Image 1 (cartoon, rainbow, N blue to C red):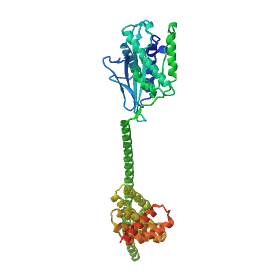
Image 2: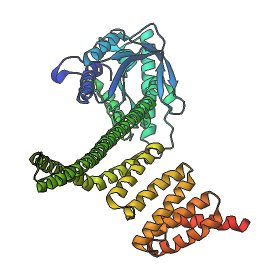
Image 3: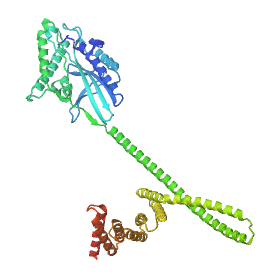
Image 4: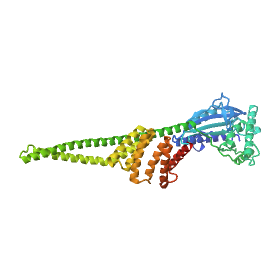
Length: 506
């Protein structure tokens, strides 16, 4: 209804209970953005247009001519050539509201001293991006101040005012028809959104793409009863319309790319750090092990020198004892003291040597672990060096016939195979086999492992005649001790089949 307070209800800038819907909405939106605490990026912009006699006019830039356009695929209706101004506070939104209202078409009628002669639409677009969702969400708040319906006899408008009144009533009638069609639960009537620019512009909000609220303002005078009843009937019809808002979100490819790249970079940095720490640890352990070996060699040299000196002193003591028997004792006391000192040094050196010897198994194990690290990193040269030192340390502390020596031989032989040094590999595998068979007997998994390794080396070289009996013997032993799906058993079976096929072809 014209003159019933629609514009005042929407746009009154006063604070408190009299504050209009639009300023309240602006404050609410920016309070929500503030509560987000910078998790997302927010961009807000305002468009403000009026529909005057079915012509679109830009209230923020009166010189432009906005056009209605529709997004392909989505059917979303939007404005082209309308001024879009970024905003960052409720005050800026209110300033643009007042600026647009000053350009709005109004006129004096018998029913209203400042009657709105157009429908005004304030559009606040909110774009949220970034954040953990890695998507961009676009929302729009349409605040529409409709021109009131009026009877020409009561308003007393003429000429241009009459054309304005007709245009207003026609567009409101089209809006009513759209509401009636959407309220029809049978769905047999298509809403006539294209009948007016007002309904066309509101199509997205009304047809299920958004959430819509309707404020009906009614005049309280006795002469306005008919218009009041019509307005209430329109409101009752609108309440039967059921719409469901639809989120307009799309994956932010730039944000996703940046996120994935940062994840990859972080993974690479973490991997590089782990490799660096592991290598520093390996290097420190290698230096410590080398220091122990150097100390062992120095102790051996010291022991050797002490033993030589001990033998010399013992010879001097014998000479002194002979001289004592003949009555002459030149320097006997001095030689005896020196001999006692040398024995004490010899005992101390032997004690240190024994301590180092006790640590040799740990040193050998460290070398073996270092060799494993180097093998996994693809450094064959360092792998060979560490495995060779491990073999030497195991041999020194445990003896050449110990099973740990055989395992160390197998490690080094694997490196030789990787270097295509098959002769050296076979020599070590055979030596390991002899140690294992002496220690565990022929029916043992480790013994079978040596046989399988020899068979694999011969098979790789194409010597299938030599490989097949070794592989068969290894398979028989493994079959009794391992599960059917054990990788070693499956590998031996594969090479057995390969050798059998190769011999059949010959």
